[in-house]
Structure formats: structure tokens, C-alpha cells
Length: 252
Figure 1 (spheres, rainbow, N blue to C red):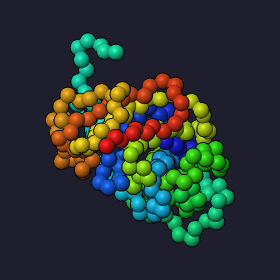
Figure 2: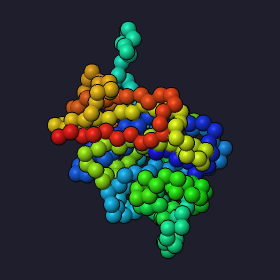
Figure 3: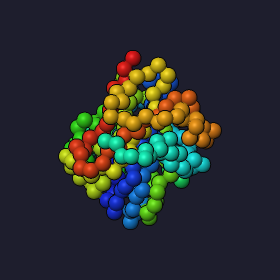
Figure 4: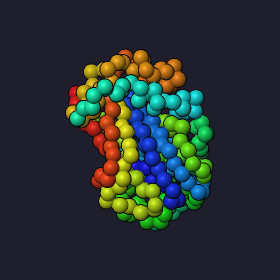
């Protein structure tokens, strides 16, 4: 889910990479182009393992690899011919504020539960009552990235988190861009993923890279996010679609 604490002028060219990490962890890399008149926050709800504390998400600085997704896209050459908030009243505000870390050009925080939004600066919370309209997220955790006003391409934001279901790969694709929850939304997304060795994903509608990742990615800059000797996969999500997150089943 891509949610903004204030209305934005436009959001486009969203790209998301996901890969299974060690144990129950998952990597996510997220990038987009945005136009905004005010400083704001982007909130990504995450299906974290129950009981995950405020240090459960590890943020990864990709400021020195701004072309991460450009390189990733280069692994899929075009063929010559075309082919077919606040706490919502759930609990009193905690006494301590949440830790903020500098990740490249962003300040980032992990909010363990909905009620912990009261520990963030109010500028970076979603409108009151938002999470009541999304009851499926009441037990999620939240990665929060603080963005500056203006327009332009956002350098990749990356992190790992402990997922609650190790048999699913998660892509945050639901979005709230105007403070409201709509049943359908306009998508301009490209999803990428990479199975680990001996791991099988449901990839029926995904395009496979002809080469292993090391042939088109700068592995030394990727900070462990990429498996060098595995193929990558790509699937676009374009047009008006149901406004929901995307999950892929991992088959053993």
C-alpha cells in the first residue's frame, strides 16, 4: 500500500521489487515519481509477524544506487516484434517517540501498530479514521518515509521486514493518494521479483529475464538485495484495477 499523509498532485512510474530473505524476512525496494506541494510522509503497511517491535524493520540505504530499477529493467530487453493517523482511539498515546533513521535522502521510521501513529509528528500521519476504513490492516506494521515537497523521481527506498506468512511474497500496491479509500485506483506500476534457489513462485503472468541478475545489475551496490545467479521476473500493473495489495504464493 502506498498511502500519503497529505494529498499529492500526482504519483507515477511506481516500481516495486520483492525477494525472500533469510528465515521469515522479505526484502522490498520501492521507487516512484511524485509531485507534492507540502512535506509529507509515504506510509507502507506491512504484514509483519505478530509481536514485531519498533526495531523489527531494517532500512537499507540505496542513495548510491539510484539507477537500481533502470538496471533491473535493462534485464528485460524489448523484442523486435510485439508479444501478447492517528491512533483511531484504540489506545492512549505511548510515552516515547519513535526512532527516526536517516536513509539516503529520507527520514524513515517503523510504526509497529496503528495505535503507535500517535508517536509520530502529526504531519506524517494519515487523516483521522483512515485505518477504520481499512480493517484488514489493523494488525499490520508500517514503514514511514518522510518526503520533501516538490516533484521528481524518488531514489529507491529499501528495507527488510519479518513477514507473518513465509509462503507469500508481498507487494504494497494499495494506494491512498487523496486521503480517501477508493475500491478501484489507477495503477502505473511495474512489479519485479526474484525467487531464491529451490524456491518456486506463481509466475504464470510474469516475464523472465533472459540472463542472471549479475549480467545487468550492479551487485556490489545492491547491498544483498539481489541474488546474482538467479533470474528476475517482471509484471506490469496498468490502468484502473481493484485497489488492493498483491501477494504471490511461494510453492515448496
